[in-house]
Length: 145
Image (cartoon, rainbow, N blue to C red):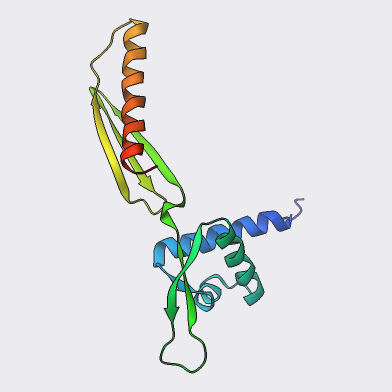
């Protein structure tokens, strides 16, 4: 017989944060009410996660929505794609393609490095690896990372 396990509060927060970040990435800026409706989370839970994600710099207020209704406009929250960056390396026979992207997957810089078959010589392997690392660092610099 298996027993069901409940998530710890920190695990539940991480799951909720990931859910909200994915929605902001997929659907663009959203209000707290829209996030609540899309996630099924309570109003206080959404308020807590938005506060937490703003403190980490992953989410920011980018505008308002609701000019047609009475009362204050709802704040729009969006993913801060520049908060972190990703480096990808695609190794193929004869060369390597490098890409630096933001959190939204927007390519910011890239490079291609031709690599000949170095043979059994360890120094040639090291030289090829050094050129690839240098190209990735240069792409990251050009991307402003």
